[in-house]
Image (cartoon, rainbow, N blue to C red; front, side, top):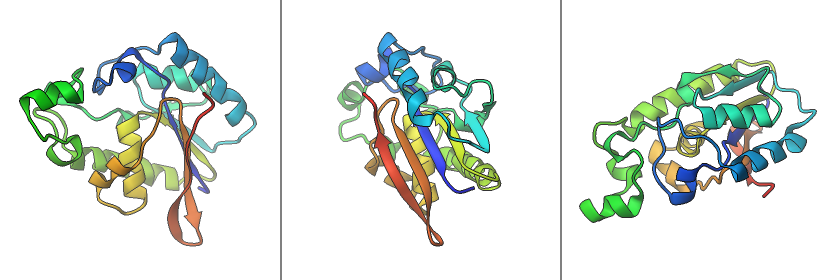
Length: 189
């Protein structure tokens, strides 16, 4: 493996509203489909030794529209954070009930812990580093941010420091023997 390409799914109604979208299988909006299709020229001609995608339709459709649907393997470890009782709710709504709440610090009731998400991303990284070339991951904002923190050997909660827009493309790689971010949050919007 030389680089890991992180491709966040295109826009959904819930990403526009700011609702926490974990396991709900929300489709792309028209704008989301347009921006996912716009990824194709950026990725076209790039040879990936491995393409993995979350099983949720917003990631799978982004993968397909970007031109990699025929070669992608579904990896359930790339599913978004299970937000439990906070699924579909926005941060301002949650803050009304839990003033001072932070997803990264406080987590969610009856969902996954950040450590559980980090363990899943660790399994993805282990698989990616065994590939014979570049790897593409089509997934979701928070899981890709946590994967990045793990790549950099940072605590998973440091993922809060990495903004990642819909249909954004980032790459992780090496500088000599050090794991680094090569490019972050490129967008064709």
